[in-house]
Each structure stands twice: as structure tokens, then as C-alpha cells.
Image (cartoon, rainbow, N blue to C red; front, side, top):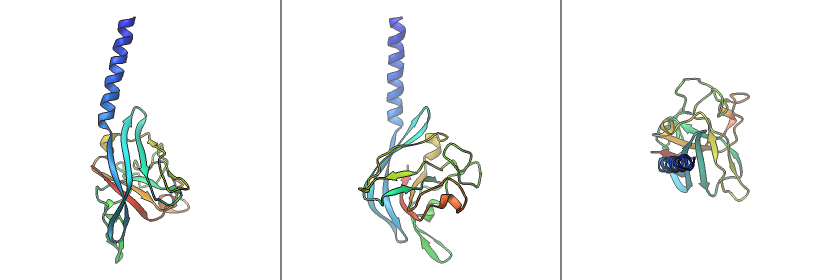
Length: 174
């Protein structure tokens, strides 16, 4: 029995080491119509048996709840739309490989890139991890991670894409 316990502990320890090696860090920067601005921190992304965890360490953001999404392209640059430069529009839309064409809950059947909202405290810090239960690490590589100016009700009603505001912070996921 002791042999089996030791073997289990060894396998568990190796599993944890492997998971730790799979974690990677995304540098997050403010964005505006002129391009990529100052660094505001980072988000560590790691895979668990329950999905992908996004662990932010961000400073200097507006207090409140913010839309938080994986976007389809690995580019945080501005792009022109209707004659106007839009911050981080080069990131494309929310990651939606199944072409659901709808915004939804992170555990629902909408965009795969829809994450739980990001909470920013009264001092402008965001440190609470969020879990995306449907994602795998392979899904997020070579994409971008976006924080929007407003909240997110995880619905396309009454406003599209959860009613979130402009793209405010972006990072390229390598």
C-alpha cells in the first residue's frame, strides 16, 4: 500500500511540474487609436483539469467590472473602420471557432473567447484569477487578450457583445 501511495505522489508531483511549465505570461498594455501604450502588468495563463485560468497582475485600471475576452488575432494595433482608427481593432473579434456568432457565458455555447468579467478594485488593481472552463491552452496561443472599458452581461441583449465599452488594454498571447 505504501508503494502505491508513493507512486501516486510521484505522478502527482510530475503532473504539477508539467502544468507549471505550460503556464505562460502575457504582457498587457493600454491601447488607443494611436497604438500600443504603457505597460499595466501581466496575465499568467495556465491550464488546469477544469479549464484555462487567467491570473492577472494589473495596475492603474479604472475601478469596476470589465469585459475580458480572448480575441482571434495576435495583434493589438489600431485599425481603421468607417474612416476612424479604432484601438486594438487588429485583434479582430472574440475568438469564435465554432462560428456561434453570439456572445455568451464562459461556460455556455457562445464565443469560446468569452471570459468571466475582470474585477478591478478601488485602487485600480486586478488580481483575481478567472476560469474559462471550455478553453484549452492550444485554443489561446497566437491570439490576443483584451480588457474592455465597460462591464459585460454575457449576452447580446440589450446591446451586442455584452454591452462592454471600448478596447482599453490588450496583450498578444505568444
